[in-house]
Amino acid sequence: MFKQVLIMGGLTVAAVGIFFSVNETAVANNAPKSVAAVAPTGELNSEVLKAKIKAKLGLTVDKVEKTAVLDIALLVTNRGVLFSNYNGDYIIQGKVYSLVGDVTDLAEASLSKTRLEGLETFKDDMIVYKAKDEKYVVTAFTDITCGYCRKMHKQMEDYNNRGITFRYLAFPRAGIKTQAGEYSKSFKDLRSIWCAEDPQTAMTRAKNNQEFAYRVCDKPIEAEFDFGRQVGVTGTPALVLSNGAIVPGYQEPEQLEQLLKSL
Image (cartoon, rainbow, N blue to C red; front, side, top):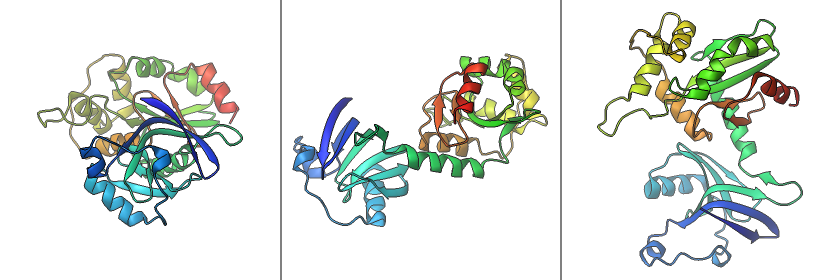
């Protein structure tokens, strides 16, 4: 991990992450070029770029967007966000910030939109704790093995009394499958909760370390997990706000209420 300031076409950006080449010759010679030595590669062809990233890295690119940086595109993949030059020879893994005016995360506007669009696809598969006098809606990626997820859940009445509705999406921290190729316990536990006749009660029992019935049904646990990884979720709890912004980690009821009021 390193920090490098790039100056390209008059725009200054800070790249925090890993810059690497997917050009086989450069990798083989162990001599990646510096960013300044990379010449502009012309027009952006999204389909060609998607195909190259798939072939070289095995990643599925769902969205390609130009950025304000010359010859640099933003890629929303099934494993998160990358940046690439237009021909796909070089990749930046990490965040890229514009230092023109306010410091701005170049990916966040696109990711916020992607998060909101994605939430719509799962709106009928969330476990919801609705506030009686609803003022705000927060969507939380959660796992029952997460200590702070349990703490937040035990305070659900306080959140609801402040007008905050909580909607849960599944994010099994152990992943979907084990190294042996079997479904992980985390996945099977969350599937059981989502498949329960009363998912709200099953979730509460699970987060209170109480027994709950093992169930199997067709629920999009894996799809919700994959969506979370795509939009920047790396752990739980992770809260998606109404503007698409993501807030990682535990938030006290009063603290979360003040944050939501400021939006």
